Image 1: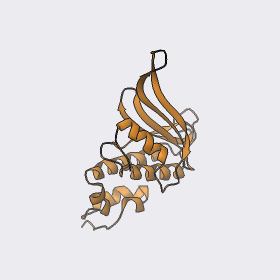
Image 2 (image 1 turned 120 degrees about the horizontal axis):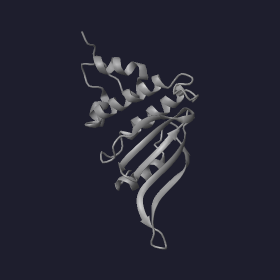
Image 3 (image 1 turned 180 degrees about the horizontal axis):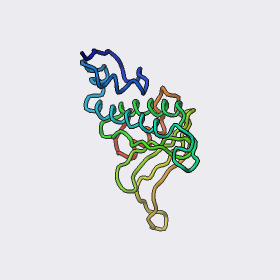
Image 4 (image 1 turned 90 degrees about the vertical axis):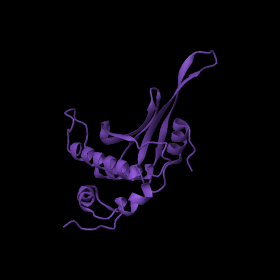
Length: 174
């Protein structure tokens, strides 16, 4: 008989998620909090868990890339959960493994319109974004882009990400 769980996704370890979500008879607290996003968030968290499994061993890609550290997965998981709190106009990001033991988290709008970060185990991330073509002083079209580094401590959603997602999706983020 399935058991009822009163839990929050953020309280679960990645390897517990599938068991919890597959066996609950009552919706977790976050199902109400995230509304339509709950299924999307659950799917993304499972994708992250799969990335962690695939990329957690030495030479996982056959090109001597280092494995993803559990701390990197945890930071990405926390950032993904915080992303579900963003306005609904901003989709949850795509997740992929990246070189040098990083996870890439990318929000995509359309061609030449994207924002991505590459996150490490300490919460340091490199960010880059494309915001479409603009005209320079000579009237030539160039791509409007941004890049830099910042950090994520696991608690506060980074302001640099909010600012750039607001710009990308043309919506206000509080």
